[in-house]
Amino acid sequence: MTEGDEYLGEYASVYSIVKQTLPLLLICVILGLLAGVVLGAMESSLEALPGLLVLVPAILATRGNIFGAFGSRLGSALHQGLIRPELKRDNNLIHSIAAALVEGVIMSIFLATVAHYVILMLERESIGIIPLIAISLIAAVVSGIVLTVFIIVLAFAGYKRGIDPDNITGPIATTVGDLLAMIALFMAAEVILGVI
Amino acid sequence: MPNEYNVVKIVKTALPLLAFASLLGITSGAVLDTYGDFFLTSPGTLILVPVMIGLGGNLGSILGSRITSALHLGIVELRITDHLLRNNVIAIFIIGVISFFAVGVFGQLFCILFGFKSPGLIRMVLISSISGALLTLIIVLTAIFSAFVSYGYGLDPDDTTIPVVTSISDIFGILALFGVMLMVL
Image: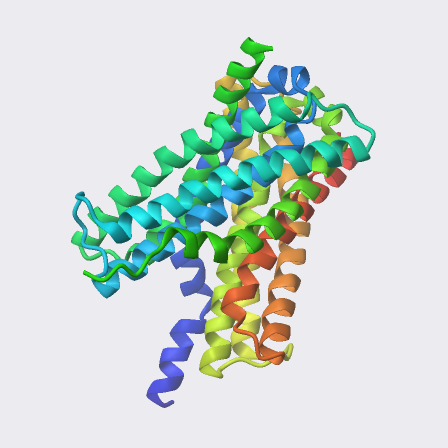
């Protein structure tokens, strides 16, 4: 057996793949279920705000996409030395953060608008375009700010300790992102229920 | 320090992809809303929704990343007898079975802890395991298909595979969950 085969043997062994990925996935299970608990706790708001349920998967998916890319940019920039792992004014960092937040704002308005018309097309009930936009916008801004801080702090702390930020920002963006987005959505729904 | 990142440039690049992905998310939400009354009468199963979608996406991303790296390295072929492909698929199924079983067990635990009405431990585990196995099968086929097809067309599979599998997981995660719930409950 040559050296290459041995490397491939370890790389391709069922046992090593399972061993490396299962622990992280079980953490994802717990965090994902907590996001579900928040969704379950929203039962009464979901009934009072018809149409909100249509938004939930799209909001979670968009959060993961925006902040997955943000984390990925941060990782590449740290590796290239474009951004230094220090919390101070830095144009690259500011533009990168601004992009994530602007994307969040534009997408939340877009999502709520499309969701409203899809609901009407399916001849189901919607609370209306303005309340849907308000909920999705509040949720996007609140969860976006918290998630930005979370990812920056963990990526910087990890990088300083020799942990590759590329290995940690992706799972954080999707699983912690889901949980934060659900909590923010819950709060936003409560606020809007209080207003209307 | 050069200013590499520009907010306008980043947003312009990202928006078309984000918009496309969000349309698939809305489709998934429309499915969820159509069966919403059913989920709302059984809050214990509603808590499974984010984790089913998320896990499907995670499994697909892991398999997708591994296949695309192997494609770039030229060490994998689209054959049932291919050692690397077969072991990766077996590993994903093992990880999937254990994770989705854990979803049922911990889901039941969280129902008790947080006071949600649950269909019981056996049914929760049956729902999460059967729909999880179905979802894993769909995700594995999607990841392999999109990686090899992208590569065949000269696209970088790294750019396509993960968005494809996570979007497919968004839709089929909810369909599988609902289908199995109808059978079990």
